[in-house]
Image (cartoon, rainbow, N blue to C red):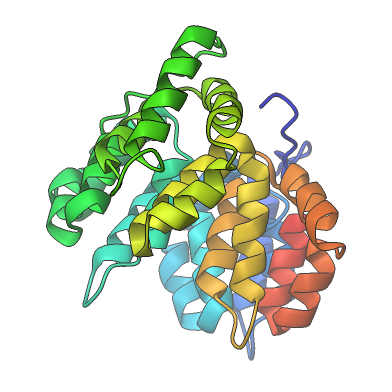
Length: 315
């Protein structure tokens, strides 16, 4: 998707010494100057934040420990997320989604369905380094049935990443999807899972078009009619990602703010993780889809320093 615009760029006149002094000053004395911390960290790239963390440690102390003492709540969580390398933050989120009773499959799907093959390989390696556990074994142990099969397929990192569309294959796949789903009683999930986990996005878009001509049903409606529960959410996410990843993230953000209560973890994860890739494009999609800007939605739903930080990352 060539038109992706980030919101956070490396600071051009980056001065790590000035930055660590500013943070040190913000944390000294009575009370914490949260705005000063936001001003530094929200305007530096991930790589620059790693330098800040390193320099702070060399000169003063462990920055993460310092900030844990000074900050609290969702603001603290978001700031700490910004100080992890992106892949470390991602594997912490994967682990959190599986720890304790119940599994947050939506988080697994959000992270794994939008990852490149290279991302998946890094997740596996980093997951082991950070948690001393095997990501594939954890996902196998924490999920079951068709959902487990789908996530296991995604973890193989075998998606075609070319931009080539093979019309014959699209026709074959569309027919296979139709015959696996609407065309007969019961749904053959393995066919659905294999196609959604291995084909490139443009190829999938071509397949969905032919599917619609064959069946007279939009693929998302077919999934809605043929599957239920977590599997339905997984398939829906994969189709939406194939059609438009930035719109998928915009929807996730909107759902996190819908109804009673706000899912701050999802807001943090998407806004922090996408800030250097495509957050500007996600903002455009949000406005187009919901007729309200992401910034206004965040202003209404979040409060305090957490809100100020997210708005600063959104620029």
